[in-house]
Image 1 (cartoon, rainbow, N blue to C red):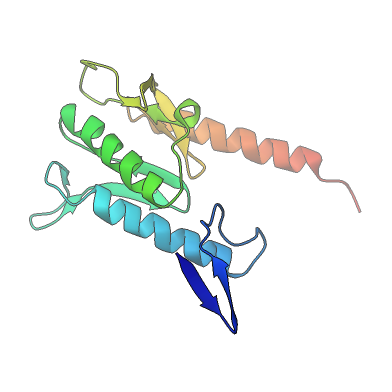
Image 2 (cartoon, rainbow, N blue to C red):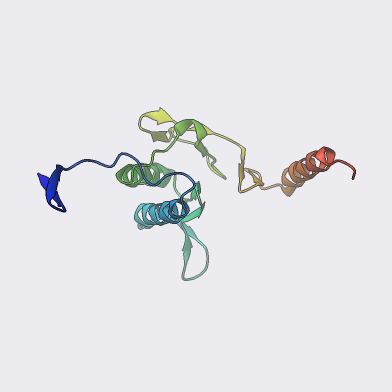
Length: 158
């Protein structure tokens, strides 16, 4: 199949990558893609009841995603859907950077991405805050104080 281009024609070709890094359209297009992926991923019941009329289904900021669920089977389903829709946009889930945390539950079976089991953790950092399984804020406060101490230690006198 050919595509007309002024007076000549060229063969169809596939686009293997998006806009160049640094282009002003890059973040906008990325956010549009992530928003579409998450809307498609989390359009089924099984989310956390947030208020009487709404449910909390996911948290995402740029490329930091948190998929929430009340039953162990739902995270695997959501992970599979997330992976499927991400692939449709040319994005991939990095299994080595993806973690699972269960609160008030014991993992029944591993959650996988493309056959790779995801690691279970007791705490992780999401948007700079330490989220822990036991919901203790002391660890988060210590982590933030340590980061602040490190930043101040790097400052030089004027």
